[in-house]
Length: 458
Ligand code: PFF
Image (cartoon, rainbow, N blue to C red; front, side, top):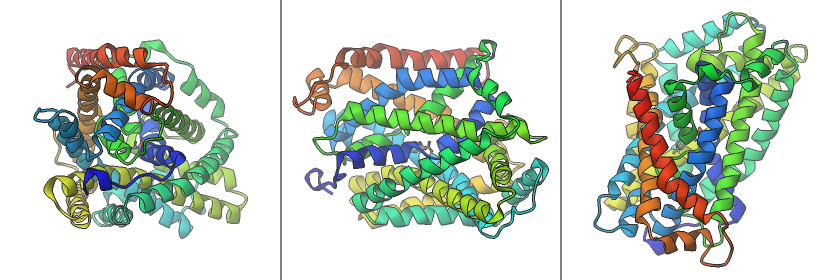
């Protein structure tokens, strides 16, 4: 596709919803509670919010600038903006990161499909205590067949939407399903807050114990902020290449940041009351947390109303799949747009390559919970390794270079033009934005890395 014939998101709200659709996903509903549980609760959330404000927002606006100005896949965008330089490698690193994230993210996406099927078939009916849910989860992920089938199924589902093209596939699905998803999430939070552990959960989530903040917590919060906002790998940069001239970059970034953080906190409020209400689930249960507590919340909310419970749980899981799908689509799109535009492949063929490659790696990640569990690298299964390397290393490194690029390399008038929509509106925060990008973001990322290195955890 030549730069001039690129597709465009049809409306301003379409751009916001598509970006929010990318940002809101398993990162909020599954990974945020997991990380919060493993990193001490409220203290982690506090550092997380600081990371979103100080690093996430400036980097998101930067990706928007690079994408809309570069009007191409993330690698070519750098080539257009800084021809003949090595900056293109920042884009290529992003594509690789996207490919790796999609491979293991699809595994968790597959779990949501299993849970949808299980609620469709009423398999959770009659189960109570967390013991049964834990057993169910552990048995499922260790199975050598079904997790792989679901992982590949999810990738094929993503493929089908991608094949529909950007506007029809991405924009439309986000517009319809996101609002419905928020609504159901709110209902579930309401239910969770009536559980007996709600008080303890509130303390855990909102009363920070500052002694819990160490280098590992800060690194985890930074990684989670980039992961959850889809930053550091050119994803929102690719989406911004489909923005039109009227899309307000600052406003879009703010909306996405607020929506994403709101959904993450809501997910915390949905999960932790259940953690503190049912026996035998630790806050640090790790990746299984959501899949043990969510059925418990549903059970406790609708135990006495089986039909309503059945319908609600089914609808919720379906919407969780859709929220996940809007994220997998965005990951897939980064790699597909890159392969198609850089290697002159048809969109269709590029998409097939991405789906096939991710299916292969995804299969290995899925099996690393069962059959391949004994094979570890630095004590981590392949699944954990992919999560660690992408979220805690590659995304921050990507974000570091993105901030340097816009802060130091891109001309000031280009930045001003993009932020004011070519002089048609005011952007009051130009100076603070540039200062954050030049000095705060890159320095913080380096300090957080050095701090972690000093702690000897690598
Ligand atoms: N932000 C998504 C989530 O929170 O689920 C995951 C993700 C999508 C990460 C796209 C990175 C990305 F480029």
